[in-house]
Length: 365
Image 1 (cartoon, helix red, strand yellow):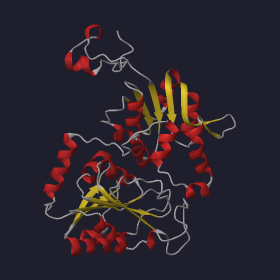
Image 2 (spheres, helix red, strand yellow):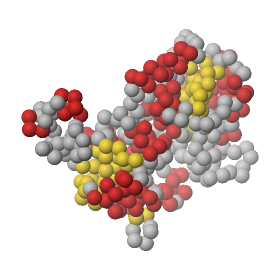
Image 3 (spheres, helix red, strand yellow):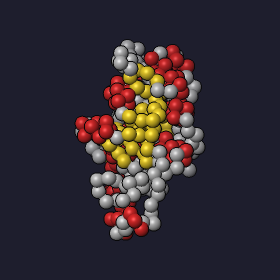
Image 4 (spheres, helix red, strand yellow):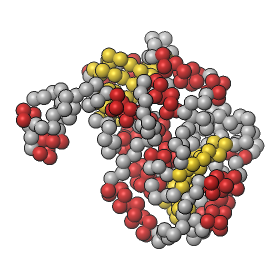
């Protein structure tokens, strides 16, 4: 039994035994396992997805490494089919007890969060990067390169002055240099077929652009653009570009009745399955969205984007030359406040016409 093989699973047959009926002694697929790496990145959906690029760099730096990723159960589907990840662990008691027994060569915790930091401190690893927790309950940086991000988490003025993208900072923390820093989502043939059937059912005319509207945003910061602005923009797009608009909605949401009455609107539905949501987003020519999960899905597929920024930092987001950032014309942009008393607020200061001009510059061909 070759326990040091990269493909050895420990509790069930490897895929080569299943597919080829080979055994360890004479297996031509044997690869000696390199570094055993644990990544802790629990939440949220958008943060997990935009962090997936690091597995490319880790694979380049540590050949034949075994990469294990611990994340929230709701984020597990995002990491599925990612060829760089060998094992995905959903955060919970079963994974916790398993990790306390295992030993890793490298542990990477990129969450400035007490749950992940305390677990990162407990798990045994020869080398740790990112963030942990000391016995006084304070967040600490495992390595010197992580201190900059930790300080930005504590001081708003440092966060606002930052000019580096999230990806650049994560590369510095981990010590990797990867050219392609875009997120990774791999759709199956069945998921691609699901999207094609959806288009057929909705009689989509391929002669005209399909613009995606992501109406939702996370609850932590007030990032959602007003729906009446989306409605006005939809009318402009249809009149000026003859575009159809695909509405992407959150699970359990209802389509605003103002959109439902327009014949150029396609309702994507409220899909609880995030991979189905991703497959529909893959259909659009361009996505209009706030700084949220849908943005990172679009960037994973190389889609053109127009991103609206208010309470979060536009500097941290890299659109990889695929579109434009429309930043609210206020000095307080990037404040990271949970609520805002200003009227109009930052997102309300972004007009539909300014977003339309950004879409035109995106050159939809």
